[in-house]
Image 1 (cartoon, helix red, strand yellow):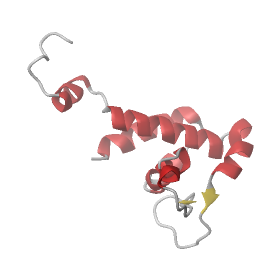
Image 2 (cartoon, helix red, strand yellow; image 1 turned 45 degrees about the vertical axis):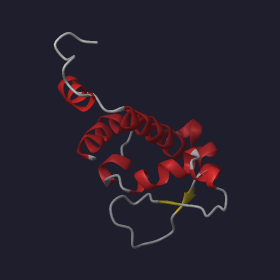
Image 3 (cartoon, helix red, strand yellow; image 1 turned 120 degrees about the horizontal axis):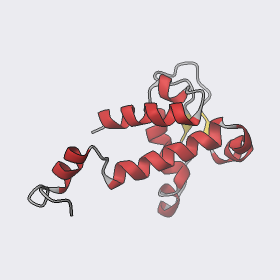
Image 4 (cartoon, helix red, strand yellow; image 1 turned 90 degrees about the vertical axis):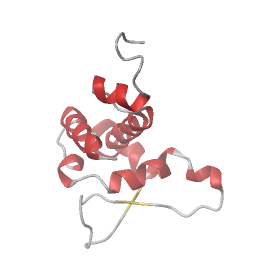
Length: 116
């Protein structure tokens, strides 16, 4: 425990230290891995079979939307690919179109800080 923050709630301590909650950090890690699988050279072949690309000209936001598959099992809904799709599709275009992983991480931090 950091001195002087013992009396604050978990959310207030995170805000005071400028950190994300555990849920946001997990989401951040998932989105970084999705970026690597979809956009970066060595991982791109793995990402092609992992995600389904949304084929539509009417996309708002980013132009690299992913499609959610339909599954009958609830366990599949908690899988990495299903957890990431909704959040990936809600990212702004400038985050998804980042030229490198470092730029993506920096812009993702800004997008996640605006996320409630």
